[in-house]
Image (tube, rainbow, N blue to C red; front, side, top):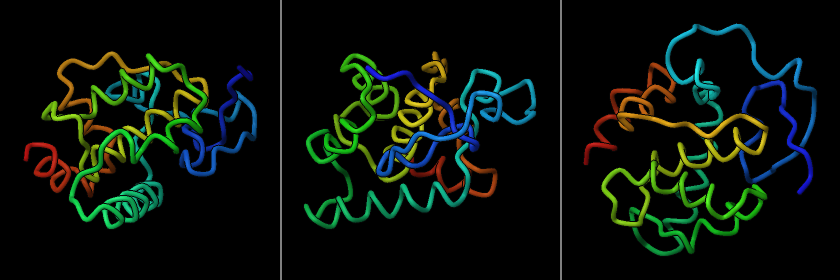
Length: 151
């Protein structure tokens, strides 16, 4: 497997593109010592969240559903070049209700974590999962994400 490198955003581009650039020295700007950033994964930037949501919309529209299964996400997850057990773990912590399917914001978090891991950041060890997942959303998106994740 090729070595993982970080990008200037700290999480890399959305997994759809999966490009490698920059160096580890530009990986993590100064951040607060609390929340997911202290654990290695910075929050999703608003433009990244839009990209992830558009990606979800295209997948969900193709199958006429408001959730997607692992089979629909598999092509992009394969681009991460992560070991199967890491992809399985990411899927499981993002599948809030344990039904094996992800809603838009659950997929956004899964892709964000996968991109961060692809960039060399550690996998999260969240407890409780809901607090960790919500902290990855931009502050302006947390209330709507909380409603989606709780559904």
